[in-house]
Structure formats: structure tokens, C-alpha cells
Image 1 (cartoon, rainbow, N blue to C red):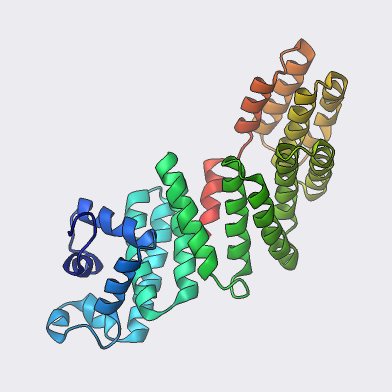
Image 2 (cartoon, rainbow, N blue to C red):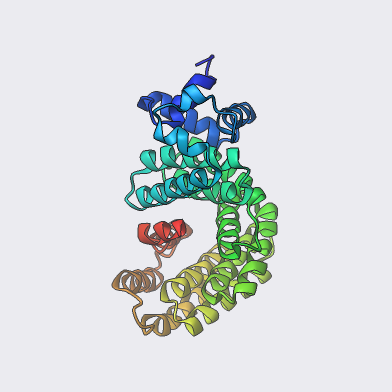
Length: 317
């Protein structure tokens, strides 16, 4: 190491998986963070025809890198392994494997695949939690979307922009979030992805409220509720209803809040709505009936209805 920066020898050992945990972590953070110096050194080390013959002697991985097709196959295998590790919640291992896949794709000039790995790595990092992980998630996701060929994998691009919209909304960057939301919506419309268009509609309501447009927010939440019921999405319908409830609570519209309790039953009748959603809605009704439907408590109910860990893992696809 030179300071906090991996030197060329460390990068070479990293690609051969001959580093300890602390060294691996340092390299992964630089590669997934888009460090230009690391990218340059890695490309010089592993570019086709530029690896020193003596370095490749007896090393199966290095020999594979001398052949473009073998290198691409190896990178795709590493990407698949990284995805599998992430699905098993082995997040540190997944990041390490994805870092190696990313280095290979960059050396081969596979820009689209590089973007795909960065988006996957962003999903992995977001599940770590914490402010530092959130910053790294932003960086990886933005860079990944910039590299990704939307026409080649529109579903992945749509998912990436959707996730970026959520992150921007959570960070309070509502105007930028709307721009990202529109990118996601255009892609979902191309794919005729009704469930995710519904999810964006609800998110649009939350952004409109943040931007001081309560009428637009109410219309978006209403639309999301109706469209969720039409698509048989019980959890999404419940989340839209809670969005309306919070809007009414903030505006002091107690009568409208009471009327919302009459709209629970169509949601509870959605097939496979799930016991947890039904219980959350009944709890919401009880809160309103007893006068305890404060903004703070309603926020907790809304958080309870957020995506489950299983749904979050689906973002790895």
C-alpha cells in the first residue's frame, strides 16, 4: 500500500485472490468507488497482451486473462457468484467478488457489464446501513447508471433509477428525485410494468408533498391506491392509504382521516394480502377511532409496511 492507495502489486494479488481481509477491503472500496488511479493500474496489469508472461506462469486465473473470451467468462462467473453471495446475505464476500468482476470488465472495456456490477454492488452496499454506506451506495448507483446501456437492459435501468429516486427522496433531494423518477417511469412504461408504475405513483405523492404541492400529493396517493387495488397489490394499496393518512394528519383533516378507515376493507380482501398488512390496517383504524393517530405513530405504521427483506433481495435480480 502507498498511503491508503493500493499499489500495483496489491492489485495483482487481489485479482488472484491472494490478499488478506483488510487488503481486500481496501481494494474493493477503491474499485467500486471508481478510483481513476486504481482503474488505470488494473487495466494496465490485466489488459490483453500486457500481462507479463512470467507473472502468468502457473497461475490459472492470470492465464485466463490472456484470452479475452476466457476473461469475460471468468468475469461473468464472478458476477454470478457475487449475486449469489448477496442473496445469502454474505455482503462482505459479495462485495469482494464483485470488485474482482468489476476490475475484469474494466480491463476488457465492457462498459455495460461494468455498470451492471456497480448497480448490483450499490444494492449490496445499501443493505449494510449507515451514513458511510449510503454515500457509497449513491456513488456506485450513479456511476453504474451512467455506464449501463438502457436499451440492452431496460428492466435493470428502470430498477436502478427507481432505487436512486428512493435514495434521493430519503436524502431530501426531492427535485432531483423527481427527475430520476421520470427516467424510471419512462422505462417501466416501455416494459408495461404495471406494479412498479404503481409504486412510482405512490412515491410521486410523497415527493409532491415534500415540494409543497398537497393537492398533487393527494391525487398521486389516490391514484396509487386505486391502481394498487386494480393490480391486486395489497401492500402497495396499504402504503398509499397510509400516505393519505399522513397527509391528512399533517393538514389537520380529521374528518378525512376518519373516512379513510372505511377504505380498509377492499385492501383486506385482496388475495394474498398477508396477515401483517391486515393487522397494520386494523391497528391504523383503532388509532383513528381512539384519537391516537398522530403523525409520529402513523409514520411508524408506514415504516412497518415498507418493503420486507425478501422484497429488498429481489432487487438483486
